[in-house]
Image (tube, rainbow, N blue to C red; front, side, top):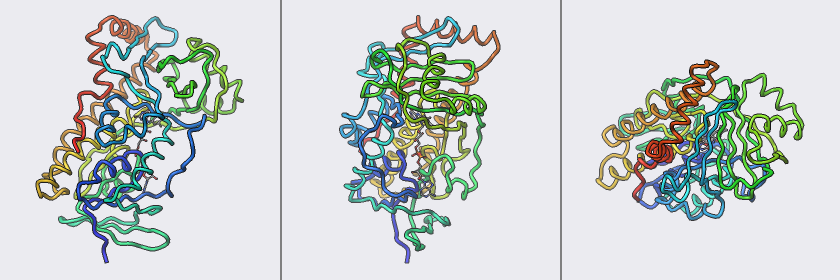
Length: 400
Ligand SMILES: Cc1cc2nc3c(=O)[nH]c(=O)nc-3n(C[C@H](O)[C@H](O)[C@H](O)COP(=O)(O)OP(=O)(O)OC[C@H]3O[C@@H](n4cnc5c(N)ncnc54)[C@H](O)[C@@H]3O)c2cc1C
């Protein structure tokens, strides 16, 4: 016997869980399949990894009634400071210049995940299938059939639309044999909490160094989250350092703009690569979030782009559903393919170019990028346009 759904989402990470919540309340039968057991309900800790959400993501989360639950967990970003280590160029963007209350918001990933799962338990249209693994997928022109392993049993499911939200190594993408383009950056990001010697004043710092970008994001409790990108040999060496050596080494990269850095928390490492699916709509299936694109975290855009995917997909699905059409047909999903594929390509190119430009040892490029930073800092209209694009303000917002 098949359990039948309108829509099955594979992957209950930040994007898959948000999508299920966004689609709840419209009379669709939704199944959410997640390999891991339900989330950890703990309070925020010093060591939590933080994510920067754009102002555009705030608007998407507001439109699906999630923002008010996050409000007391977030730290606003009111200023961004960009510099190039050892060179003259630097640039600043402020929320006032962009005419928004904040340029972005920082939230611990664990808190966001916890709030999403709390909300999911109140979604009457969503069946949570967890912990469960997809074993096999089969498509017919009318539906997608899935075999699931849950509690040591195989369960057969069917849906008109299957959403692959199963992350960078997406099993579904592999089963559908959808190729990806991209490259290994041969860099690893170390992420950790650190306490600055001076108040962070709601400022996010981005500094380009010859070995890779470093960033500091402001956190609510007065500390910051550092992201330090390094080539593999230096990463291995830095991870051997004790806390004091690590703080001193990071300080040499970042400088003293925030005073003497102290108390570094637990360090986590993330190997970095660029990957983009060549196709994001296949028979009865769409790819969303990291299953469709994995970006360098230099501009903090991965989740923000995933939420923009969500916004467009929700529009397509609900338009088809309310018009009595098939939500999984190519005609219903065509706008998603058209709009998101272009956006993925644009952002993948932009972040990749930024990494190449700011890690190039060529003197001519070093001059060009510093003149660019200076010019940018002195041209308010360019700055305004850039800030609004980076905040995702030109994108549509879900209209539930
Ligand atoms: C160092 C670093 C810093 C970052 N900073 C930012 C930032 O500041 N701002 C920003 O916007 N983005 C940032 N990102 C990117 C962001 O973390 C990701 O884009 C985002 O978490 C992707 O969410 P997702 O739900 O698509 O994928 P994931 O979070 O990978 O979730 C996938 C889910 O699918 C489940 N799953 C996998 N396979 C199966 C299966 N077969 N069956 C069932 N379930 C399955 C997994 O258990 C997981 O829960 C950063 C990334 C890194 C590495």
